[in-house]
Image (cartoon, rainbow, N blue to C red):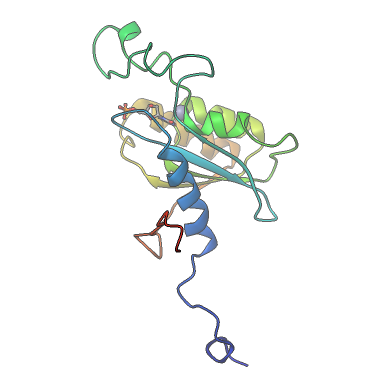
Length: 169
Ligand SMILES: O=c1ccn([C@H]2C[C@H](O)[C@@H](COP(=O)(O)O)O2)c(=O)[nH]1
Ligand SMILES: [Zn+2]
C-alpha cells in the first residue's frame, strides 16, 4: 500500500519543524519586548527533555527589573535575564543530555554555547542568526567548532504553523 492509499495526512509537521515550533511556542512566554527566544532539547529517541525561554530568574519580578536595552548596564535587562538555552538545560528532566539536540529560535550566544557544550549536547538547530556579526556569537561558533558540536540553520518545510485555541477544534 502506498502512503497515498493509506489515507494518511500528508501535511503533517516534520520532526525538525515540530521541535522548532515547540521552541517558538515557548518563546511566546517571554516578556522581553525586543527578542523572544525559545529552546527545546530533544534526545536521541526524539523525546523532548527540556524547554525554556528567556526570562528573569525564578522569584525575580518581571515588573521590578528593567527590560530596557540601553542605558546604564544595571538599568538594562542584560545582567538579569536568563537565556532560553540555559533555562532549557536547567528545566530538563534529570538525566543525561549527552547526545541531545537543541532547537533554538536564535543562534546561541557564547555563554549559552558553554552551557550547551558542558551539558553534552551535540547538535544545535537554529532559526535566526541575527547577531552573527557580534563578538559573542563569533565566539560561540569558535567554541562549537572546537568542541565538535554540529550547528545547522533550519530551513523549515512549513513557514507558518497554525494553532487555534478553540474548543471546537
Ligand atoms: O543565546 C541567547 C542570546 C540571547 N538571548 C536572549 C537574551 C535577551 O533577552 C534577548 C536579546 O535581547 P536583544 O534586545 O535582542 O539584545 O535574547 C537568549 O535567550 N539566548
Ligand atoms: Zn545565551
